[in-house]
Image (cartoon, rainbow, N blue to C red; front, side, top):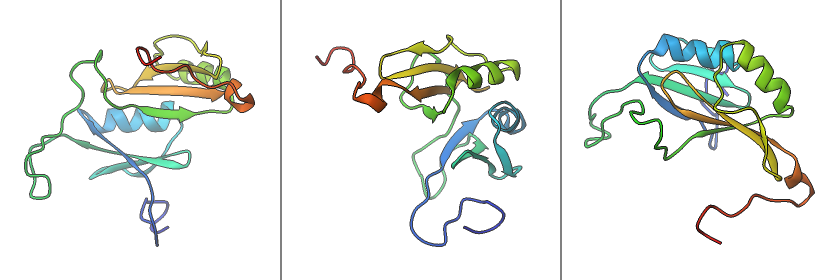
Length: 150
């Protein structure tokens, strides 16, 4: 690892998650102040270390030479999601309580799904974030198959 916690491995691979955001400062504050991340780089790209990973944020924009047919923009329809951040916690009740007190708006309180306790919230741009605590899966109880596949 190089440069004060910046995600740049000396060898091998390191996973980060990139988000296209409407307002970098607002999103940086959410991931640092509400979820407890550490700001590694303020801008260009904004980089926040969150637990054992990193969130990288930049405004959207049009095609570039290395992605010639791709335009980046934040989500526009909160009811349609193709990807989401999945955060695993040791104590979901405490996490839910602390993040709610800091301004996080959860869709529901934590719900017992048998394999895990879980709930969801959205970041300032509408990205969906799952927060889960393994419970039953630690004892051989796993998630139900996705709807329509059984």
